[in-house]
Length: 142
Image 1 (cartoon, rainbow, N blue to C red):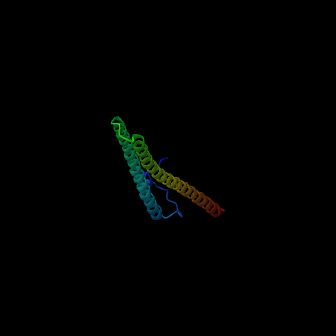
Image 2: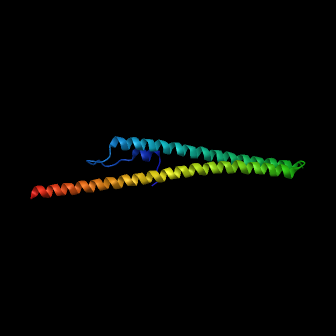
Image 3: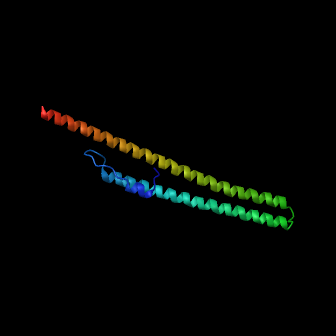
């Protein structure tokens, strides 16, 4: 299941007698959804920056080709310098995008783990409540 802002906000849990506070769970999910939305926005921004850097690399390549066609003095040094600058731009953008992507993935994994844990705890509480109800009913019938 892929999480997104709306899925997190709309997550519902069954009510139980001694379960978690509905308001606390809802407030927590709001915080999580907001953080998730911000991280997704950051990732989109970084992808756009990466695309911009790729465009810059293409433009630099075109400038190199043009300079080569014009037989610019010291063309190879110029070309190497521009290529190195372009590589640095692209690598920096990719590194930053990777860091943010890893952060988002870690947060998503953490959220999925929390949701699974909450579901397991809820089921445990339901099972305990059923057992207590059954025990109470049995003792009253005796």
